[in-house]
Amino acid sequence: MRIAVIGGGWYGCHIGSELIRLGHEVVIFEKAPELFSGSSGYNQFRLHLGFHYPRSSKTRHQIIDSHQRFLKKYPNLFFPVTTNVYGISKGDSVMDWMTYKTVMQHDCPGVEFEEIDPASIGLTGLEGALVCREGALLAREPQRFFSNLLRQHLRLNVCVKNARTLVDGEGRPSGAEVDGEVYDWCVDCTYGQLFNSARGEVAYEVCLTLLYKRKDKNVLHLHHAFTIMDGPFTSLFPCFDDYADAVGDLNRLHTLTHVKHTHLKRFDSFADAKAYADAFTEADAQRMRPLFEEGILRYLPTFLRDYTYHDYFISFKTKTTGGADSRETVCRTNGRVISVMSGKVNTIFLAEDYVVEEIQSTAE
Ligand SMILES: Cc1cc2nc3c(=O)[nH]c(=O)nc-3n(C[C@H](O)[C@H](O)[C@H](O)COP(=O)(O)OP(=O)(O)OC[C@H]3O[C@@H](n4cnc5c(N)ncnc54)[C@H](O)[C@@H]3O)c2cc1C
Image (cartoon, rainbow, N blue to C red; front, top):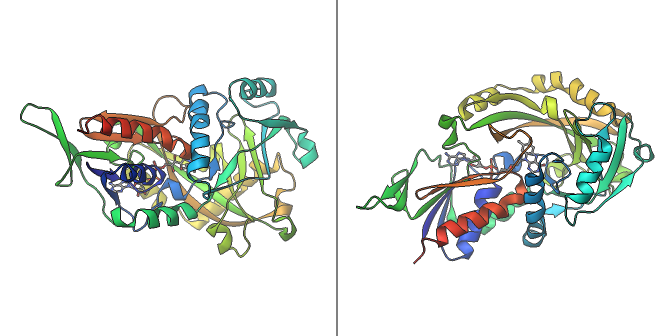
């Protein structure tokens, strides 16, 4: 069948490549000059295992179910993190340490972790902490990988304006029209940017991520990640490949986020979010820096001794307007147009299963 996939991030590229593998004729539209120009290229690059979502069993289970498939399918697109710590903030966490630990022990099938003494790795202000095997996604390699794999199927620099279902003489869905071209199906992988604005079902958050370099070149083989739970806290996470190459030393770069300060502003329309992001400057990032640093110094007092500010980036998070604790992947079919609302990167497989089943159900 002839299928149009709109959006060249993790979801569009993965789903597009699977449809090609199944023998379909696929065209992938991307409005930017290159793939992974959206959130897939600008996020915290955490290959989630569920530790981030103690209050959403559904999100945890989606992530865990997809994780092994991700490791098998893309063995060269992630990296292990040596010391990956999740800690519960003392006194002001939504969930206390015992409850957090119990949830992770009993409702994360097959996911291992070890409890540690936070002080043993220089952390303060925590009620308890664990070390887990959650890895990191490579930052730039997926873009190169999919550009190469999909090169004969890409239409870059094309911003799709409209996609709609076509019906036959009896009113049954017969195909999809994408900016005047006819396909059998259309899959919207634009992270809610193409259709949902008008419906008010999603909101667009403009997000600020700061980048810091580790100062000590002798610890390059150690990759540290610290994530403080459960509430408006901070996370320091290693960032691998080209970002790191750009600062001269591989594996020294880290992203620093903060639940409260990373989310700069929320908008009902993507155009408004984009306008706000375009007006954001380095001076604005510098104004935000003390808030981010205060957030991590509370738990890692040696942060400014060990890390130095490097840069920042802005990206967009699309959120469904209900279910604040959930980051589920949700797919919906309207005639011959399938909308994919992504959750986390490694839940691409849930979307793939849905899309393939829908499309195969109409194959002759
Ligand atoms: C700050 C931040 C941190 C995050 N951290 C993590 C993390 O650590 N781990 C994790 O798993 N997830 C994380 N996420 C979520 C993750 O980034 C997203 O779930 C994932 O990248 C979404 O992939 P996608 O392909 O659906 O969307 P995108 O990567 O945004 O791709 C959508 C593409 O569609 C294109 N497009 C839009 N409209 C059109 C149009 N009309 N025509 C043609 N093309 C169009 C865009 O240019 C874009 O390239 C984070 C997100 C943010 C914002």
